[in-house]
Every structure is written in C-alpha cells, then in structure tokens.
Length: 411
Ligand SMILES: *Cc1c(COP(=O)(O)O)cnc(C)c1O
Image 1: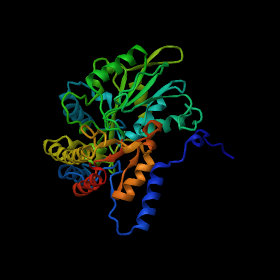
Image 2 (image 1 turned 30 degrees about the vertical axis):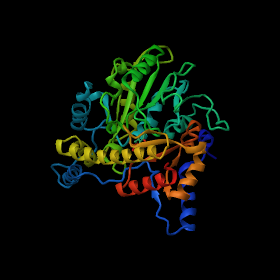
Image 3 (image 1 turned 180 degrees about the vertical axis):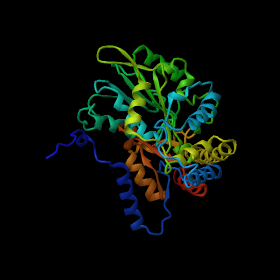
Image 4 (image 1 turned 30 degrees about the horizontal axis):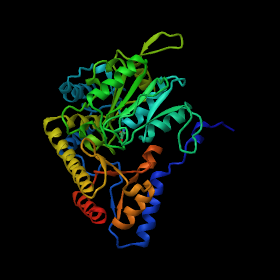
C-alpha cells in the first residue's frame, strides 16, 4: 500500500469555521425568528464592478473568434497585465519593478503556500500569532515542523505574538530565523506597520540573511497617508523580500481568482555549498513547471481594475467596506469595547469585554445580539480574549448589528 505524507496527520482538524457553523445552526434552529447577522466572514460581498465585468466579457468574446482566441498564455502572466500593475500600482509608490520580477497567479493563498517549494526544509520560519492559518499549516505539510503542543504551537516554528500589549508590533525573534512572514495590513488584527517598523524588519532581515514573505492582500484598504502599501517602499527590501498581492479583497476576485508574486532580481539565497543563487530564477522555474497561467479573460478583467474607470469603481466598493469598518469601530468604542484595526483594513479586532474567552464572547454575541463574528483564539493562542468582526457585508446589517451591541454593552 502507498505511504501517505505523515505531515498531514500533524495538522489539527479545521475546527474554527465548522464549529462556528455548528453553533450558529444550533442557535437558528432553537430561535427560528431571530435575524442573525454574520460579521464573521473573510470574503467580499459586493459584486464585480462594471468596468471589470465589461473587460471580462470582452475576454470571453475574444475566445470565440479564431483571430483573437488565446490558448496557453505565458506561465508568468501576460506582460500587458504585469506592466499595467507595475505602472498603476507600484510606480505611484516610487517602486520600480521589471516585468520579469512579477508573476501572475490564481491567488495569493496558493502563492504563499507554493513559495515553500524553493526553500530548503532546514530553514527556520517565524510567523505571527494570531495568524492567517495558511502560513502555519503549509509549513506543517512540507515537513518543516514537529508535532503541535497542547496550545497549538508546532515544534520548530518561531511564533511572534501580536497583542495589544506590544501594540501589534512583536519583538524580533530571539533565535536566528531564515524566513519571516509579515502580513500588513494584518489579517486577523486589522493593524498595520509604519514605515519605521517595516524598515526595522528589512534591516533585521538583511543583517540576519533572512527572507521576508510580505503578504499585502489588504494594501488597497489603507486609508492613512504614510502607511506603506508595499515592502519595496523600504530601502533594502529588494535584497530580502518577496511580496504577495491579490485581486481578491481589492476588487472582489475571491471567486474569480487572480493574484501576483514579486521576486526581485537582487534577492538571493544560498545553495548547500554556500553559493548565492537568485530566487527569481527558481520561482520562474517552479511556476513554468507546475503552473500553466491564469485564464485570459481573468487577466483581462484584472487589467481593467487599473483603468481609470475601473479603479474609481473599485475604490468606491473599498470605501463602502471601510465605512462599514468605521461604523463598527466607532460603535463598539462608544459601547466601551477596546477595538483595534478597522482604519486601514476591513477587520476590527476587539478585546472581549470583562475578560471573557473568545468563545464565551462568541456565544454571548450570538445569543444576545444575534451577531456572528470570529473567535480570536481560532487564529492562534495569542488571539484568546480577542474577537474579529469583518466589515465585508451589507450597510444595513452592519448598522443593525452595531446598534444591538451598543444596546447590550453601551454605557
Ligand atoms: C484573503 C487573503 C489572501 C488572498 O487569498 P487569495 O488566494 O488571493 O484569494 C491572502 N492573504 C490573506 C492574509 C488573506 O486574508
């Protein structure tokens, strides 16, 4: 009989979202008239904007005619899309990139998982706690870790706690690490890193020969001037950082699928003999072998995000979500609840009142306000005592949910 990959058995069963569904359906069965509002989702809720849809349709129509039909495209993505992104999304930040440094993909979840292919298992990895679970679980799957302890920490991963006590700016790892995952604006905490804080990470990476994996999935939600949208706004980042971006949250592509990874040419890693090799070459080889590109109509749709019309429409949707975030954040603050995030990210991370556990707060919110959120402990041990509310959703629902919470906890 074939042997399986034992590393998969180290993974804890996906518990968070099934458990939320179980509790919600138990509640709705017992209270069929309660109008439950879901602010737990990490998925967009508004449709694609007209300019994107138009380009998407045109892309499909091109496929119907012999002269404009597209078969396999470049594994790296069409250069017209890459150059548009470089021009519209990076140049305005003062960041220069070459076409060969950007790789279009079907989303950044896959990219930040697949990137591990080009790194040796001996690398020590540091991740946040709480965290987007993909970073942790993919390291378990490739066999970089031992078993999890009773708290949920895996042996051989360095965890960096993000808490209110450290202002969601963890100290540098005490032991030497080779790969550091950073996600700003952060999921789940909704907090950001300043230019100075990112500069400190870049300097740390450069002096420790470490690589930063920078997940910028939420950069489009930054509203405050001066907060970096890209790690490459920081001097030295081209020598130490890989950046992941996605059209998912930016433009409602969660069900369309398009993302990108930037691997600058200067970024090196060493062979077992100590020889330096450019990671851009390895990632290009990896993608060319294991990936066949994103569909042509999707890349047409993605390009339209950066047309003048497209960006104005996309921005309007982002502003809608961020107005939801403001309503949640200000409403909860007025009710005396400590909130973080929600200014430069569509997530509000709140400290549970009266020292309740994340799950106790979940039950109370569901039972008394009919509002569903996400227990912070589901994102990692340091998320215990916190709770995530999402600004993706309908304005009226957000207002109703906030009114109910204020009624319950308001002073
Ligand atoms: C939603 C999200 C992504 C985007 O994933 P896609 O695969 O591009 O849909 C990446 N990172 C984080 C932290 C996210 O929350």
